[in-house]
Length: 152
Image 1: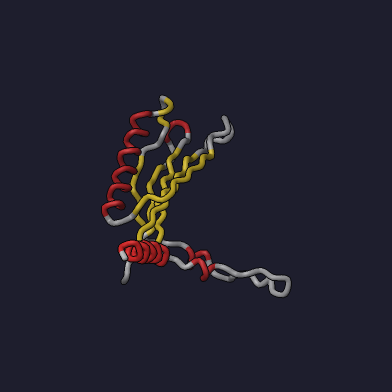
Image 2: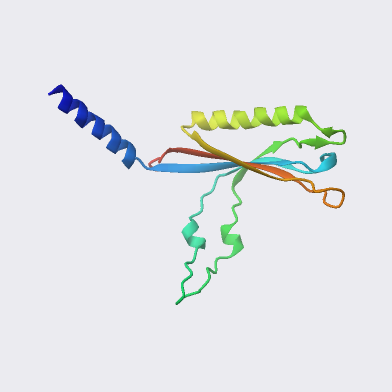
């Protein structure tokens, strides 16, 4: 009897986990690696939501109609922008700035964890300065959080 009860409880827990809906949120850090510290570095988090379906069209052999949504409809004006420090200053790489940015990003991650978000994935990319004629560069990191979907 105990074995059957245990099996039923196990399946109930597994089914409840599988049927739970999850929502995701992305926070992006953009850190400037422009020489001489002239770039801008920020931690960006959307406050507003968008449904990708509103800006998507399906291309087929029979119908090649493109989505006519305006860029203004896609653009979000409600977002959090947290100032970060640039990786470079006139003297080169500024390690204090990197440590400062780490502290700010850690604070954001901790605050989101307190709000019930779990850090699920982290991905990053870099477009570095290509020499004297370029003068551009950013280091982008996306922090992808998830949590059980909130009922509104």
